[in-house]
Length: 247
Image 1: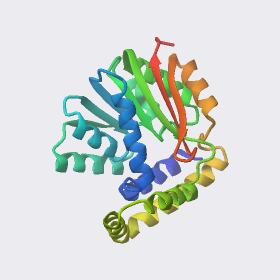
Image 2: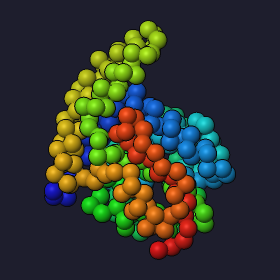
Image 3: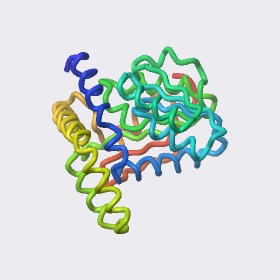
């Protein structure tokens, strides 16, 4: 797959990305990631690698205004939306335009927690990215990594959304349904982009893997595994790891 097409795909996806960020599985995912960050003890600074439109960092800032927050992403569209939301929410978050293959431009020991949600899979080889994250982390810093499993599909995620939707109150159902109707054009973009991503993953262009494989590549990058799990009906994999030293 050409670099130009890859950039075009993610800029296109960015236009509608905030629609999917309010979907019930994605809300649950962010809640779980924030819990994992909170569980790491004294957190002074968090860097989100592949931050998208910044929703995770914005929600984290609502819980922890004292933490230094930063995010990087290569999508101009997504970062523009992130900066608009940062302004509207009046949050102190630093957003920078960098791809995950350009982490060598980030200073040593820039954060004591690095989080990356559904970004590492888009690289041809995640090992160099994880090695750079190891360098970016402070001594004993923690990595919170979320990535799709080889069971992931957009269709299954929509099915999970419907299952969670049935458990909502009537008012919650009405509010979410109205939002969905109002954002139909954005959802069309999201659906098209995810169908393309699913196809590219089946052809090996994206790295949807097994939990053991993710654990191995993280360990080999100089991390000690703290916890590992699959959630959202086995579609997402989570690994929390501690920096052990440079590789």
